[in-house]
Each structure stands twice: as C-alpha cells, then as structure tokens.
Image (cartoon, rainbow, N blue to C red):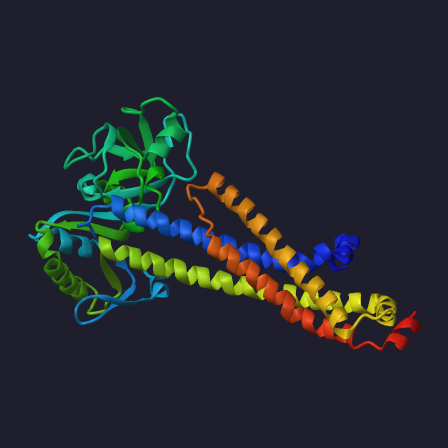
Length: 401
C-alpha cells in the first residue's frame, strides 16, 4: 500500500524527496571530488622531486620540538601577503642551495602577434633553475638561462595549443605588458603543479624573474619559492638555517611556512578535509530539511487517508499494521530520495570530469552511508505521523469527511 500511495501521488512524492536528493547528492559529490583530489595529490607527490622544498607565505603548520607537523591551520594562509625579494635572495645566497626559483605572478594577459589572447593564461616569473627543480622537460626549444631570458619566454603546452594550434611556436612573438618577447621553448605537459600549487602550469607563460622586475613598476608578487639542497641528507639543517634567515627578514614573525615535498600531502589533505567538512555540514542541513518535509507530507497523508484508516481498522487491521504502513511509506520516500541523489551525484561527477582535469572518485562506502542515513531520516521523521495514524479511533475515522 505504501508503494501504491507514492505511485498515486508522483508529483507530491518527488517534491517531498527534493531535500533528500539535494543533501545526498551534495555529500556524495563532495566526498568523490575530495577523493579525486586526494589521489591527484598522491600522484603529484610521486611525480615531484622528493628533495624539493617550498617556502610559502602564511603560517600554515605547527611543529613539535622534533620538527614534525602537529597541526595544519589553512585559514592562516588566507589573505596573507607575498614573500619578498629579500627572502628569495637570502635563499639564493646560501652556499648549501643547489637550485632556487621564485614563483611570481604578473598581472596582464599575454597575447600573440596577431592579437589573440588566452583568457586562462597566467604570466609567471621564475629563475633559470625551474626545469631542474621540477624535473620538467622542454618539448620544443630550450629554457632560458642567465642572459638569454631577457627577451625570451617559455610557454606551457595549453598556451601553445590555444594560441598557435598545432604549429610549433618557436620564434613567434608574444606580448606581455606592452613588451615583445620571443617564444624560445614549449614545456612538455606538466602532470602536476609544484607541490600542489593552485596554478596550472600548462596554462602559464614563463618569464625570467629579473626581466619581470625590469618591466613592472612594483615588486612582483612571490607566492612560492622552491629550492633544492646540495646534499639531500642535510636538507633539515638547511631548512633550519633558512628559517633563521627568513625570520630575520620578517621581524621574527613566523608568517611563512617551509615545507618538504613529503609534507605537502599532509597540508593538502588537511585543506581538503576542512572544505569537505563545511560542505557536508551544509548538506546535512539539507537532509534535515528534507526529513522535516517528509514528516509534514506524512501528516498531510494521514489526514487525507483518515477514512481509509477507519475502514482498515474496522476490517481487523491492528494499530501496529497501520503504524508499519506509514513507516514503510516514509522510509521508502526517503530511500528513493537517497537513490535519486546518488544518480544526480554520478551525473554531476561526469560533468566535472568533462569540464575539468579532475576525475571524481565515488566510493561505495560513501554511497552506502548516505543511503543508510536517508533511510534513518525516513524512520526518524516518519515515526510521529505513523503513531498518529495508528492511534486514530476507527469510529471517528469513518465519520471523517
């Protein structure tokens, strides 16, 4: 009878399930995107140079006396300034540093000789050490070196495709901030960003840091400094020395973070965890609203079917049977909402994988938990209406108009 009731009121039943559908789909999509990001980060760290060290603005990590990260405070990195030229020089001048490069963004879109632009492109100022730091090959041409980077740039694979199609753009002109540069090289595809940076380096135009400083009126915004130690076995000692130097630059304010490649995964996971928790809380509110919607519609259903309840009781139906009928209906509504939510989440993940490079990963554990929670919501919010239906007096119910 529960199935018949839902079938006979398709529109109302579907509207009742909307809250559950939204909540379940939000949870599953969030968890699947987080899992996809986690796997991407693992692959990224495997591709990175294991000896690579990153310096970033903001106090992201707290460490114990042994130097191990004990806590991640992602919010501490929000709204902070950049690293400085002095920070870069302090690291560069260390005799223990083998290679170093700032990652510094420049405002303004690059465009080629015929005026074409790529809206997603970003100009990044780096040193000649970048390929060594990232272990990244140049597919065509070569990377600039000391002296050769004054009028040349190297572009990411996506920039080359968007601006020049299938043509090899070596020797082509590209304009940055009203200055013409020659494309001297094209990077092979970046499988990852340096230490999980938010910048897609396939969409970047790389310019010499010294040149960038000469064509801008202000100091470039350095959002990261990468470096390698001469002796990987002594990297911890080098990090301690650089920590002391940077503290002196920052007035003893530890408003920066130094991370080894092996520690980036922990930071990224923590960041993803914070974002996931926030969305799951919002989705939980949607599930709660969905449960209230089910309870309200079940109260309406009990009122509308008062005579039916009276007829069934007069024919011998027990209070438990009436209670079970409405409980099954409420639970079924909620479970169906959960199933539809799973379908919506899967469809959303397909769209995400098509529009972005991220591949969301649905875990059956997440599916099972969310559908189970949906069933629980149906049971919890269906209990009171079911009890109300079971307690109806059969004589009074038969008189109901």
